[in-house]
Image 1 (tube, rainbow, N blue to C red):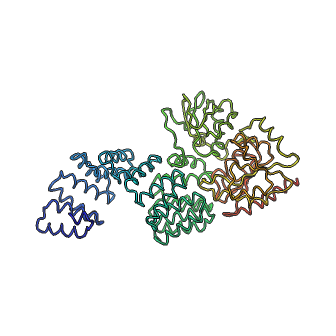
Image 2 (image 1 turned 120 degrees about the vertical axis):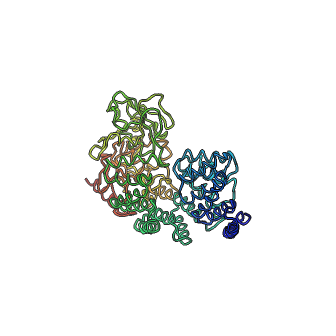
Length: 608
C-alpha cells in the first residue's frame, strides 16, 4: 500500500501478486493489484483483478468506485456509471465517486447531470480541486463562460502553481475575448514551465487575436520543434498562416495535421476551412462531410459547411445548416421563450413577432431588411438592436418598434433571431430582398448640416480601410492606410469614415489630406448622416460598408480573396445592395491589384 501511495506502481503490483500466490482470494491484494494495473496503463487487466475482488465482497464502496474509474479509462462510460451508482447507493458521501460519476456523465454529454455530480463532490469536499476544474470544463462546453472562469479560478486558487490550471484560465479568458489577460496568464504558466506545450499554444492563440500574428506563429513553430506530432500545434499553425494570407502554406500544415490524426473531426474541419480560404469550396465540402462521418452533427463542422454552402449560393441547404451558429459561443444563442420560434410555417398576419439582434453591428444592419418583410406579411414587429444602432433605427419604419439590446417586449406571439429570418422566409439567390435606394434613412437635418460643412464642386468620397482589431478575420479584411493612399486623387474630396484610427495609421492619416471628423461621429446615426452627404463610399468589409449599402449609397467594397459568405463568388455586384460594386483580390493578400483596379475605375468615372 505504501508503494502504491508513493506512485511506485510496478513494485506495488509485484508485492500484491506475491500475496496472491499465497492467498488467491485476498480481497485487498486483488483490489489494489487491479488499481495498480489500471494506473499503470493496463485498465483491462486492472478491471479483471477488481472484478475478482468484488466477487468476494460485492458491496465494497472503494472497489466499486475504482472499477468505475478503470472503466472510464477505457471509455466505457455507461458501465462505469453503473458501477459508480452502486458505490453511491452504499455510501452516498463518497466525494471521489461523485467526481468520477460527473466525469463519466461529461463524456456522455449529459451536461446538467454532470454539473450536479461535480457540485455534490464539491459540497462534500469543498477543496476538491479536480472537481472544480472538471466542473469548469463542462461549463465551457455549455458556453457558460463566466461561470467556467470562476470555477477554473477556484481550482487555480487551490493549486496556485499549476501550469495546467493556469492554461485553463487562459483558455476561458480567450473564449471571453479577454485576449490580453489570457496572454498574461499563459506567460505566468510559462515562467513555471517554459516548455509547456499547452501554455505555449494558449500564448500563441492570444497573440493571434491581438493581431501579433507573426509572434504567434513563432511560438507555434517552437511547440512543433518540441513535439512534432502535436496535432493541436499544426492546427494553430494553419490559423496563423491563414491570417498571414499564406493559404497554400496553411494547406500544407492542415495536410500534416490530417495525416497525424485522420480519425479526429477537427482536422477535417480545419482542412476544409483552409480549402475554403483558397475558394476550393466543393473540395472543402467533401472534407466537412468526412468530418461529419466521424462525428455527425459536430457544431463547428456544420457551421463551416454552412458558410461554404452560402458563399456558393446554395441557400436552401446553407440557411438550414447556418442554424448551427446558435450552438457556438461566438454568437448569441437563440433565446428561450414560452412563445414559439417562427420558422416561416405560420402566417404572420396580425401576429406580434419579436426579432432580436444576435451578432455584429454589420449583421444587424444587413439583415434588418427582414423586419420590413415581416411587416409586409402583416406582422407587428418589435426589433431589438444593439445600443450603438438605436438612434439609427429610430426612423426605420413606423410599423417596427425599436428597442435596445437588453430590452424585451412585454408581450409577443412569436419570436425569431434576426439571422434566422432568411431561412424562415425561404430566401434564395433570386429572392434576396433588396431596395434600389436602400432601406435606411438618416435625419434630413443632420444630412443638411454635413452638406453645408463639406467642400462642394468635387466628388465627396468616404473611406474605410480597417475594421475592428478583435474581428477573427481582421488580418485579411483590413489594410494599412499607407497602402491605400495612392488611390487618392486631388480632384476628389476624401473623408475618413473611421471611428477608430489605429496608431500605425495615424501619422499617414494626418499627412494625407483626408478630412478626419471621427471625433464628431458618436454613433451610427451620425455616420449615416455623413455618408448620405457623400457621392461614393469606398470600404473594406465592415459595418460601415453595410451602412452605406443600406442607405442606398454607391459603395465600392474591397474584398479579400476568400470573402464573407454574403458576397458570394466571381461577381462584381451584390444582390443584397444594388448600388454596391465589388473589387476582389485575385489571390490572397493582393490589395495592390484591388487598389489598381479601383484607381482606374475612379479615373474612368471622372472622365465620363
